[in-house]
Length: 328
Ligand code: NAD
Image 1 (tube, rainbow, N blue to C red):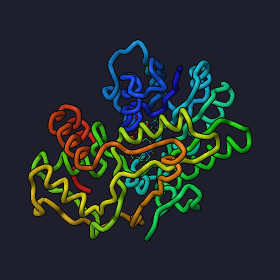
Image 2: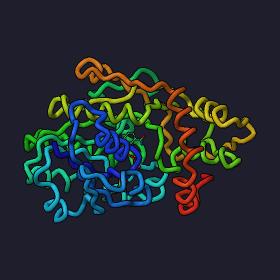
Image 3: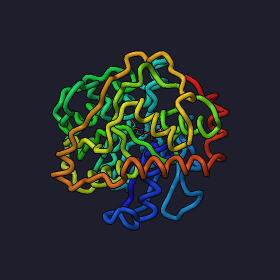
Image 4: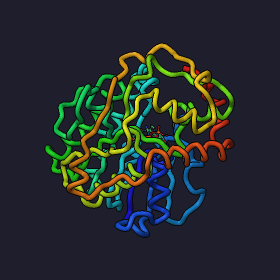
């Protein structure tokens, strides 16, 4: 099996590729992988093995149709992670989000169809649903994205489904909740807070800290994606979540405990513009149809994540220095 992975040098894409190369998925043992990644600020070649006979790494852009035409033929499936992924950056400047997430996805869909690729897994997000006060979203919920990031992901999600309905492409869409784990770029809340605390610096908590997210370990997301790749039905959407719902204040408390710090290390900052209040996914479909079940508890996953950042300063210190991260 030959799998074409876009964005495979980023946080989730690289976790997926490492799992594939370690033969963690029974249905893809021995699979070879081509990674296409632009190595934008959040992509890091060091997230992948330096050399592996089953891995081909190509630095390039998903909007480059000529490059895709050269690379795609011969692959059995595409797993599409590449994206501009940070909500705060999309609030500052939305154009790169439209270019990569919307235009890039469409170019990739067109070239995958031209190359006769079998399955196309489009990795979307629960943020496309907007915000929900009570209950949980099923896959039939209307999309109501609020941030430019979420709106660009909703657009690409719909273009992927349109490629199935219009052209009969074998597309499947996953919508996942918030991921955490090792190798996450230290601008996102968990690695930002952990690395600040490890350096004895304060952490910036948005607004009243009451925003609720469902936290899922990245390895559970990757397991869900592989299940969908192997067994999902064409043209369908699958929510992936089922971690633990926590307010940002509760999450902050857990991170302070894990790093041995107290609440005087927390600085309340002005809320993010248009900040969604609560996300919550109903995952009965993937559970009942495909037998998905998250395996990593939040306690174990957070402890392992904090340990990884403590033990891998050489990975994140240069990234943080370069991006001048730390506050908000
Ligand atoms: P990330 O920012 O860590 O990784 C994105 C990767 O895409 C980087 O390696 C980057 O270099 C690459 N990339 C960016 N623009 C590109 C382009 N034009 N061409 C080729 N490569 C390009 O993001 P992530 O957190 O790993 O997210 C991966 C995917 O999962 C995204 O599609 C995101 O929307 C989705 N998702 C993320 C989460 C989460 O909690 N992080 C949750 C649900 C869904």
